Image 1 (cartoon, one colour):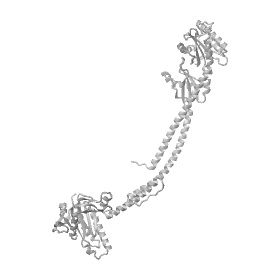
Image 2 (spheres, helix red, strand yellow):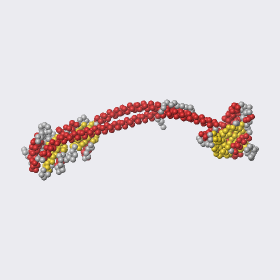
Image 3 (tube, rainbow, N blue to C red):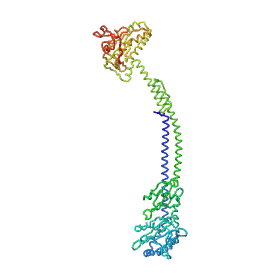
Image 4 (cartoon, rainbow, N blue to C red):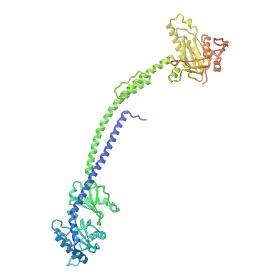
Length: 605
């Protein structure tokens, strides 16, 4: 598997961290810009609608008051009861003339010509006035020259739109305000702002009819809305699937209608706000119903807010964040490289130190470069190396004063003060004529001779899985079967005895000291364990078999191995022996049967 270095991991971690923070900041910035602009647009739209409603009230209140006064005139009641249409309009014309209505000429032209573009003069000249009978039907002024109402352009559509008032005549209580969109004489659709005033007989409380007064919306009513529509804000009125506005271009209105058409066809009111793309510019759209609970068609205030500014700000912030993030990423990479370099050097030194310790060099030291955790780690490593060196020294010394297997068991806590019964083979090896040989020999030569002799014999003991128990002068004692037991301990002891003699004879060919050894082996049950005190232990075996092996060793001649009956029985057919005369040994009441070990056949695997 491909291994990634620590430096690469640190760099990748820094890059992922910076990238994650950048994405989070970009997302938070995007959401914040969107919410801020949406709140700004909502506040502006609410202010625009409130201002529009306030101006509308100021605009229509005078007309509403005059229509209420006209609706209370007895002359108008009598004219409506008589059904004299011309008389009805004459009463209305005289009333408005006496009240100083500036649009008197426009009203006269509207009544007599039945034209929706009538009027003239300055100020609010293009007013419209119609009277409805008790059934909600429009009463037209009859021209005496013709004898019937003139046929006028847009009359049918206007009557269809006023039919909504006719349906609501029975429940009409206040003076509702609505919007109608009849066609003008030139074929264009004109938006009217209309007030309906109900005429009720003061005595019978019966409905006699209704007065309808309106004015073109775009000539006066849209002015406050137009004043507030500045910059990228465009407003209009939505009535019966059409947008009427001077600030929204015609081609944009058509495109907007197509996007709103699914709401209109489904009969579901448009949502309060949503996003559209008009003129290749994302825009936020706000809707507000202007005439709730009105008999007229629903009219909505529509405002389009360009999102170009928000998107521009958002893009600028995005590039700023990206720029700052790039700088932060570069700084993070440089910092990561510095940190990685500062960490890698101590880590590499620690790796080299561990390799040295694994190879046995406990004197290795790593430099302590810093005072942080890495420096503490280096110092701890050096302390560990010193401790391992000390332990290795102890182990080496212990191996020198005790058998390696015994030392290992002691260090692992497997041996304690006390013993256990074990079946072992005990071997004693002694130099023949040692006292006479060393009688006149300098002590240092005696030590050198014994060291050479015991080193060679110890190696033979270990090669045959024996445990070196002790050296006593020129005597060597070995145990086979404790503390570690093997499958063929007795065979190993016999083979070791013959190899000890062979090793001594080989050594005689090179050494200046010609020595001969005798070996004795006894097999049986002994007590094996640590003997001594709690603070100074010696692993050994005790028992009658140990004494027997020592006595057999004393009886062995030069280059002779003497074994007891139990050892011979354990070896079976794998050895060749010579019977010896029964031995009368010190410490044994009865004679001991013994054999001279001649050879050991190779044991089958």
